[in-house]
Image (tube, rainbow, N blue to C red; front, side, top):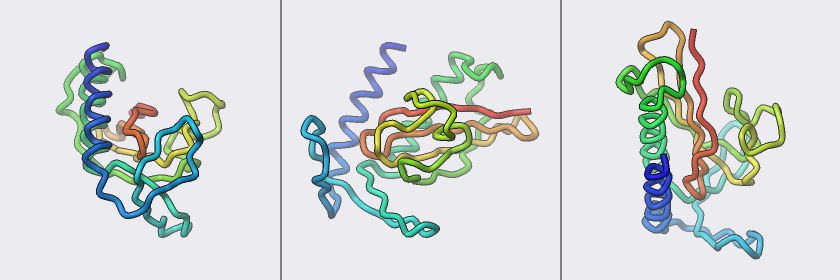
Length: 154
């Protein structure tokens, strides 16, 4: 697990460096948070501006590795075969939007809520071995950090 976290940290740092081709710099960060160049998009449903530093492809790579690791450790209690999952979709959500059980107001801890203040990517996978199973992984859209891993199945 320790090796995985170190690899994830190195990958995140590399992703942040390589994604520095954005067009807008956000300068309203706290004094102890590094200044990152962020890209901005607008949520078509709410017209809210959402800033991010990593791309959907980078977030998906992080989520894929997270899912592989979770399955290798039988984290969901459904076995260790990663190949039962099929990528469904990825979406960029604002820092206060809900994704299934994540950010749903179940508590004010980083285990269940997005306390970073950053937007995040919700990455969804269908469990093809179940009638209605799916996994979802939430990745910080600025740092690439793993925020939440969840599974729902029948």
